[in-house]
Image 1 (cartoon, rainbow, N blue to C red):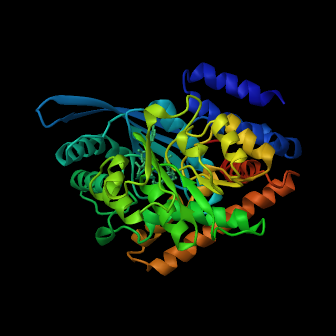
Image 2 (image 1 turned 45 degrees about the vertical axis):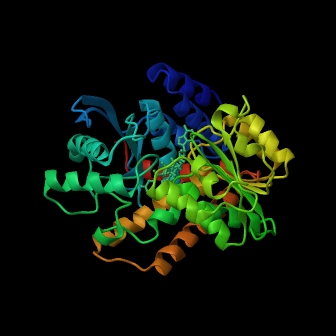
Image 3 (image 1 turned 90 degrees about the vertical axis):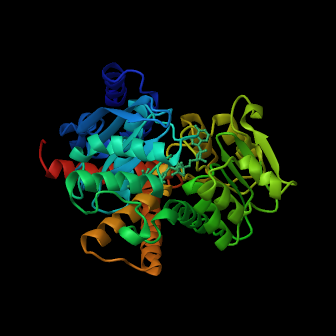
Length: 450
Ligand SMILES: NC(=O)C1=CN([C@@H]2O[C@H](COP(=O)(O)OP(=O)(O)OC[C@H]3O[C@@H](n4cnc5c(N)ncnc54)[C@H](O)[C@@H]3O)[C@@H](O)[C@H]2O)C=CC1
Ligand SMILES: O=C(O)CCC(=O)C(=O)O
């Protein structure tokens, strides 16, 4: 089928240098080949050409003053990718590596992820190349206010509802919300991931990590196994990694690693979760400080990582949870994981495995849960936050957690069923992409050419 090649070529011409976006698009388009053979009407409606093109992309200048009185300038982005299923929904990332291509790949993944949740949310993403590292609280607040000064005119509780991602947690959501309220005079559910005492949902902070663990549980259960007693490798030390680790302990597993941009920590007795939370959620310190309390743990600085990958994936374990960032797990890492006995990988991060690493996992037929399925618990719980905001309610933890579990089980079920329907029953990448695409594409056809 020439359309995959042609579409990717057209993307490369029209959107130069967006390599992460091409990677995400290629994976989806390749997976859709068998669907189009059975259901060519999707091609007749030009769904492919339409779905790879964002409905709207907003790029703006963000000027703010640092603590020395110097004016700083950053780039701001919001990609409103697809609204066939509901208002645009997706996080904001503040990290110096952010480009328009990064936001586009994240927004594209978000379309299919949000569709898999079964909830009424479209796909979007935003962010900035602002680097929060080393910035004072006042600088972070002024940056957030400047960012929202432009963004506020493009978002709203029934149009586009941003949330957090890398570098954007409850503190930043608070500053962004305050500025939105000041500019619009409205107190409404325009952001999710808010603090619990002014509109946030209980369980949202934990949801992405917990969801990735529930997804692993589902994959293991399908193979007659559980997480109990398993040694787990986790990367990252932020929101997703911390609550992955918390849920692993609750289910009787032992998470022995975590990592940040400075290096990898390995504690064979199990990561001290209270200390990790204190270091990362309170002090915002480097992981290296963990050694002050646990001198027997090992810390490997990033400068000593293998040239072809990441130290965290070279350790022995049973289950792996990449929870840091895109392309953090290479083909050589995948090979090392498989050689070291890992039989299950559940992605808390977005697109953490390179395309060739994914090929390795699929060829080995291990339980592999791609990010757009395994980390959908965060956005699903954001939608629960929207539902609570619009009905002026706050649900108890039991209700939110039960719904999160149900969503994750349904996503696993859809991915596995769709993979089996297309005669590749262990391939949850195929299942996730086809199941997510079908829901969006059917809605687009029903809504006409818009
Ligand atoms: N926060 C959420 O609800 C959701 C997050 N995700 C994804 O999970 C991943 C982690 O996000 P959060 O935990 O929210 O962010 P965070 O900002 O709380 O933590 C990110 C972690 O990854 C590390 N990291 C980031 N960039 C890195 C790099 N270039 N090299 C090495 N380490 C790096 C940071 O040091 C930090 O430990 C991202 O891929 C994000 O898109 C996916 C779904 C929802
Ligand atoms: O909670 C949300 O709206 C978005 C979460 C997110 O950015 C993601 O799923 O990657």
